[in-house]
Image 1 (cartoon, rainbow over the protein chains, first blue to last red):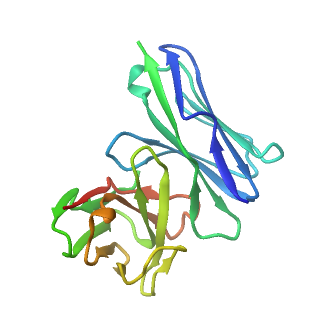
Image 2: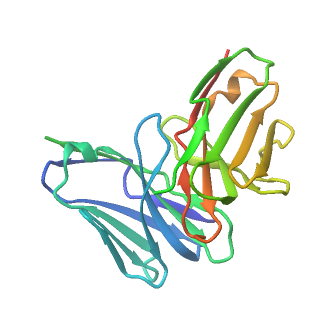
Length: 112
Length: 116
């Protein structure tokens, strides 16, 4: 069966450290993989997109890697801040599909 | 980035009434819009895919007569929850995709529906 799993339901880290979130998928062939941030009661906000032929993408303190052999994407937030506390979702779009499939989300809390 | 709006942001209605939610892409043309439903502490569940000028494609288990979708223009899609019941209470989110950017979608802020 097809699954998209994000490492843990909740992740707590100390301010200033690097947060690493994991997105693993099975039985998908994604052409694109995205990461979103969602705050309570709000819609997801797009952060980064990475294509299947890309290994890494960076944007300010954010870094995404994509390993199609391991079927895994890692999302890093360096120098984390309490304002980074939110739920982070990964989503993938297959080569043949028209829709995005979402992971279960990881709730990140950055402790001051 | 691109902006997607939703209206209303919150609605409370009586059981049996119908509720319409609007989703607009404000600064781009969206050939495809998606409607999601999200329960507390859960991920987004795709309900239907809406293409401008054609009928929506519903996901398995989603009643098309219950959740009416209209995508009348490149900037507007509506979701109407007909004869709403308490179990329809949820957070409804739309997203829109630009025609030229197949790998990207932008989400609206969501609509909280409470059916009494």
